[in-house]
Figure (cartoon, one colour):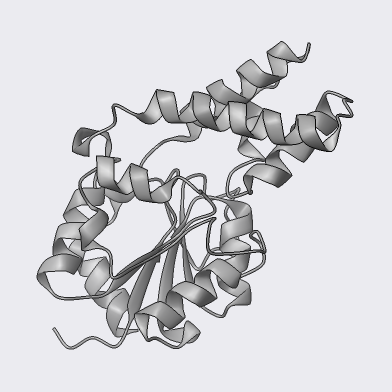
Length: 219
């Protein structure tokens, strides 16, 4: 099909569910510091950089640490997280995602990753989908966290697309806001009430059929 649109996917909660591994790693760190964090609090960390996540968590625990200890905590949490995700494979793709990726690949529709995760590349490699992406923009490529649209604007540039010709799949409030600020079409994946600022909402990719993908690409 003739296409003049590009697709940008967030990673966590959209393509794969690594949020549970982030939560377990952050919670272990918090427990080691003498307090706990809840799943509800973890929701607030979606789409947020590692630095800002740690700042938020330390605030919840009313903890102040030195700069060197802050760096140590970030490194320790990341090592814990990487150990937890090391055994992921294609079976860990969220339901319905492979169908959409297969369609885009077969029809030569360019798509990129736009994620705050600094571990995006090893995760995509483990899922065996890294080479499908036209471009990958992750936490190593940006200086501003969502809701700043930097990650999506860089992805659009790498796709060779104007921002308004890009479609973003996001599961976080900050990510939807970033897509909207960039004047991209935003598609919320998850709770429609929480993501009500998105242009379209779906609980997950099993609700998205190829007819919708074709329609949105022509929009």
